[in-house]
Length: 314
Image (cartoon, rainbow, N blue to C red):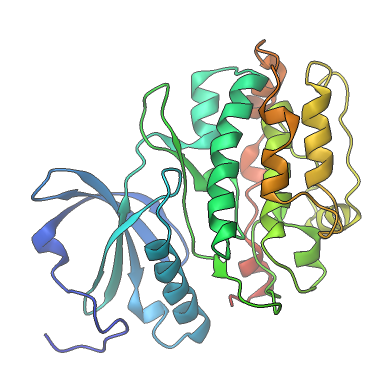
């Protein structure tokens, strides 16, 4: 078969091994289809990228190579695993684990109210996965609920970190400078155009923890410029009555993660050593947080990524 190859060593026989099924996700540069392994019958997810969208785009090519390199490198029970990469005449197809349990917030809204103890157990798995990444020099750069999936529909299902399209391997002291991510969860040093490192993920984890415990984000505004200003100041509160039933330990950990100066922000290792992950936590249901997640228009938090806003992807 003769065509322009972007990934010379990749096989081309996708459909001989996998039966493509329905589309389960779609983005600006790719779509994701459910598929079935014809030999084992196991369901997988196939990320399909249109080569015409990336073949002449240096930034997109760099992003593609980076995502594949990182996914091939990571092997952790709470990180989506890549199994195959195929290149067809018009498409690049990345075959990954299929997490049928759905996105984090959608699952919570469906299942109902949860406790602070439940939140701690969930976030321990997430923080452990991010520590594994950071120990290997990988920064995710787009941690948000849509990228945290449940492996199955079982009540005891484990979570999986997904979507490494913006991830990078950080080497040496150079750090990163690209303004990218998702507005609600992005760290202030990214918005300020400074050199930054994996600690941007720790800020995002703090935002996510805050939302899980009260049902709304620590920084929000309909106007993105105002939102970014709020994030850069780093000023937030634990307003009553939403935080009245949440432990002081939780508030303390969040206050060490949502720190504007990354040199003073907790690393994932420090966070995992915090008492919030080891002390006996309240088991009463966080009904107020669940109500907020259900009624607030979460789609308004899912503003177009900074990649789109600033027109760069490196």
